[in-house]
Image (cartoon, rainbow over all chains, first blue to last red; front, side, top):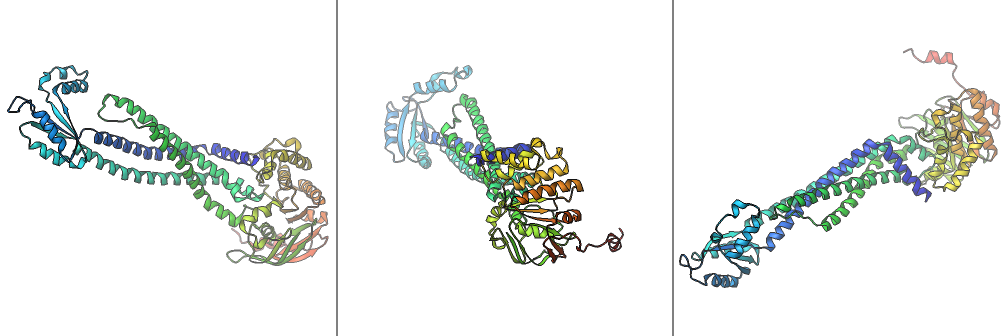
Length: 307
Length: 242
């Protein structure tokens, strides 16, 4: 027990004595991990929105009014029933003029000048969910053949495809960035530890002189690296969490795009980043220590020369 | 306690610092290694600490062949050998007490053992009243006493001292020698490298003289005389003007 306390005390002394270098290392870990976690969050937001769009309506067929321009009464329901029989279609819902007006009012609530319209100009529509998003062009083509009933076809598929390809680019980019920045964090910690050892070289040589084992000398430096990695990672997780929740709150007003990344996501990745920070700290320390202690093994404590 | 068998040490660059040295030091002995600068005294001390590997030959310390000792076992050797150096090697940011306790802390001794043991050894070196001071607040002699206390606090069977009085005036040096003598009387084997004539002559202990890495004399109770050191006048002529 006294050994553990001694080692912790030594690590704390070193952290305090090299405070500027330590802050530098913590900031380096913080910045690298914030950027990496930020990339993950952006990716998650895109994924959430892709899912939301994918789960919703994929194709909307806006309809000409029944009883006008040669559209017979009952044509809307007939078309909907027909569409539902198509292989590409999962479901087709009828959306009458009343519902269209309600939706319009919700979408533009508070914008009086836009609400000042004749509700009758809003068309009824059929909202179609596809079995597979990739089939949207087939469905669009088939709908466009219904020239009498169908006024216009709108599809979210292009946007979804764009989002999907953006998401995969960001995935690769995020992963690449996480790797580069992770390595940068490790190298910076290695550097810090090397400086810390240099600052404490007399102490280390005296420790070797009085018979401290190499592991005993290493542990305070490993603890120091681990603490730097952990603190940097914790700050990064906190900062990205804070940023994202503020963004989500600000984004509540434009409900079309989801920004509400779940707490579970932060918990899972936060934990992983903390572990990564600690491991990066330990690896960095090992790298920083290896050269010095190998040299020290060869030459031992710095005894005066002049044989 | 310590045995050297035909030990040779050649440094990189070809300097021969120890040349076929054989020596047998018994338990409880006090041995002076004497010789001019460059005669190989410090090298022998470093070889006995496994601070340097031997080029040829064998060294036994406390019954163990240290020339074949695996690297990870070197700390265990050093725990049974106390060391005192000319430059004290104290940690400036630790107090006297902390410096001495450090030697026990790195061995993982519990505080309940460290406290009394440090008190006892500080009593022995007569520094109990200065336990809370920092090295910079002490005289050279006092700093060396702290260094002796640190090397002896673990009660090692062997102490290796490399010019422990090298930085001290004669009166202070006598104080350190009295301390080492007391430690030696507890049964601790002491090997001390020095070129302090007065001390060697006064102590009347075993003297091993070295010259150019070679052992030239081994007297049971010798003095410093007989050690060939160049006269200052001769040196003045040898060393070219700047």
